[in-house]
Image (cartoon, rainbow, N blue to C red; front, side, top):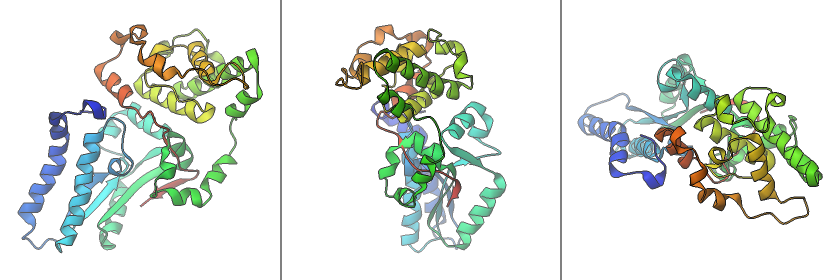
Length: 316
C-alpha cells in the first residue's frame, strides 16, 4: 500500500505496519519468559536509507530494529537484520521488472545460500542489528546522491571510492553542455537526453527520434523515476516528478532542460520548470496513468538522490 508521505493515512499505516510491528511485539510478549537461544527479525534497509513512497514500510522495519535493542536492554536475545534484495523467493523474485529496476539503481539480490551464511555469521557474532545488501556503489551513488551526507556511508567517500568512479570513464555531458553555446548547446542537450533515455529503455540512442512519444517505447513510472535521476546526475538539472508525463518526447524534455539552464552558458537560468509543471496538469494524459504509477511518481524523491561510489560489495 505505497503512497507519498502526504497521502499516508492511519489505515495505510496500520495495514503495512501491523504484520511486522504488531506481530513482532506479540512474539516478544509471549516468549520473553522463555529461555530462547535466539530471536531473529527480518528487517529491511528501507529503515536505514528509506524508499520512495514507502514511509509506512520503513516505519514498520524501524520498529523491528528498535525492538531488537529493547530486548537486548532487557537481557533477552535479539537480532534484527536489515536485508537488501533477497533472491530466490519473494516479491522481487516474482517481479522481473522490479528486479531490473533495482539492479539499475545498483542493488543486486542476495542468494539463499548467502542469506543463510550471513545469518549464521551474525548470530555467532552476537550482534543486535546488522545490515546485508549487495551494492554496486558506482550505480548506487548515482541513484541516491543525497546519501553522501549520511554518516552511515560517509566513510565510503572518505576512502576515495568516489575518485575510483570518476576514473572509470563515461560521457561528461555537463562539461559538454557548458562548453557549447546557442543552437549547438540545445543539440548537445538533446544528445544527452537520448543517451540517458536509450540507456534506461535498453535501445540504441541513435534510433530515438526527438518527436517520438516515450510511452510508445514502453516508458512506465519506474523508468520515469530512473530517467529523472540519471538526467539530474549527468546534466545537473532536477526535473519535477510529473515532467516526463507532460514532456513526453526527447525533444520536449530537452526543451525543458534548456529553459532551466538558460539559452546559453552566459545567461541566468530561466524560471524553474518545476512551478510551471505543477500548474499544467491539464496537459498530462492522466487517463493513461494508473493509480499505483501516479502514487509512485508523486512519491519519488524531489531532492537530489543519494551518492556512494565504485566497486561491487556485500555490506554487512
